Image 1 (cartoon, helix red, strand yellow):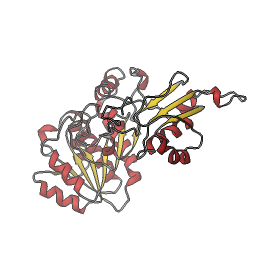
Image 2: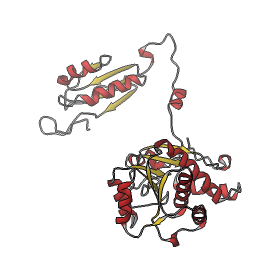
Image 3: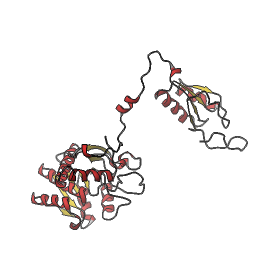
Length: 335
């Protein structure tokens, strides 16, 4: 599964249109319909749905999604949350198709009117801002996102939740907090980052017909279980624990034995043959009951590390604490 930056996604769209000859309106139709049928897994026939439509590609997708849902017989209110002047290009073309299909939409003049609809809705679909968002949201998006996040509705996002940065390195933002996101063509970096991942909720990727063979290979993709299994070495049937490496874990203390215990267990599960633990003597009984396979080496809390020359790998620091050693001097091994 490829992982892209915002710029790489823009480049894929450009290649699709210029090199492969795919029209932007067609790609937008493909995207909107693919997302709709993906989102239908979370929508019931009796649900009342609010679709929030912004500018740009996300807004155009929003008009396609609203039209498709209405054509399927769902109860949908389409809300355009930006001025008419902001709707242009392919998005404007799909707005015209939406209107020509006989479907009404509402313009947001007051946030109170939208909030009334949200309170009556079961589902809110976010098609406001796409991968170009950076920093904190401006109005009216800041207010709209706040209203959506406060309501007890099922929140679904198109490609990327409004306000979430597509790329890494952005910590100051506010965003639509989706329960589920239908990602178009390829996940963006922020899907996998600690500060942004929760805003996506659960997610999946839909394919919209881009010419993948025309794209540059950025060598960035999700490392999956199958990749791990493929790279794990096979063990000889006659090998023993001494054949698979010897490791030392130095850490833990009388009052913090847990982290060094979990580290030792993780090392053994990952394939290490012999694991020794250097820790405070008073912590050994609690650690030994948790991880029976490990051995122990002598190490006084606050003292010097044992001889490391016989080990293939060493992990140092977990649970060792920050207090000074007896006598006031700093510890030889830090946290």
